[in-house]
Length: 453
Figure (cartoon, rainbow, N blue to C red):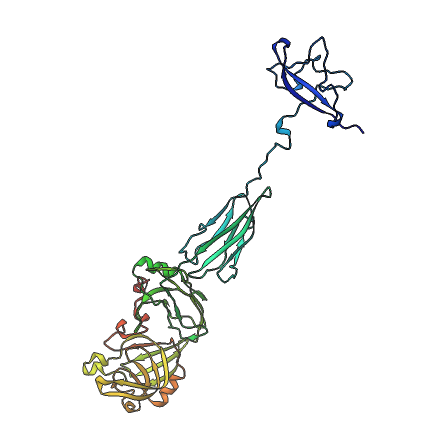
């Protein structure tokens, strides 16, 4: 079997016309079969085949006579080209293609991050594979890959004061890869601000019940108040007109964020309230803690009309009178003592006790047992049983400021009352105000309420 031949060329100097010669040597394929003559002599008009120094070294540049060889060693066509060193596999070099570029946002190694800050990994020249983010316990964080496979985004809130490890691979269009490895570290707050919501989840309340979001923090600027309000939402079914306002309730160190409708709630309204302040910066390295939600229902429409000059209370449901009870109010207007005047304005039922102890040392009594007590403000006003004033009930006002009923009437009213019911007191000289304690939301005119948010 005959092996294919190789053509090898080397340069040499010769006397022919002062030119540099390329001597062509033919090999039969194996060293053992070299011709004894070593180089093939070329006798053509007494001259060697010559290439001028100005040629490219390609056989293609030879003239017809110079490009044709004849003899026992066979022929060489003009299409043959002597290989350069670049074609030699022992000297050729190649470099692997670079992997795709990967960008992390925030940059890997970032610290003091908000646990709710957007975090993602992106490649602009390939796709992402097997991206995972794990907390120090090895639990994977939820996330999502974009439809084009170029961006992976964290899909849940992270924890405070933790370092999260990110791993994965980016694959380029040519198959080249880039390993993904880095960390994100969240802030460690000095303390966390939490919220609670009233009415609580599952409650059924009266038509005057305000929504109260207790924050445990005092905003110092209007901008801070506005930012907090962006993270507290209310949804009602049916839709109800209302607004938020900052209110300080009796006994609270910090103001609360209250929402009340412009008019009383429609009966049977469904209300959903959500406070989502987690991760919100409050200054001085304080951050929002766990949020809160509440789903509650507005009950039947019951309004108490309490007229101090008529010495009675009228209970109405859906605008219809269902009961009228004789009563006695505070006698402050009679004896000229404003502390004993039952406040006029819209009170809200805030508590109910079948039996309770009442004290007012200023007026000479402590720990007096009373029954069927319905609290309507934190200044000490109740609608309750008082057998000692039965003779005055329906006739004149003799109490220290409470609305007194007989035992029978007090029990009957108590059993219809509900947290959030409005009690509209009229006919006295002193108006209910913020000085009277807890729920005074309805004592604020609507136009003024709109300026308090």
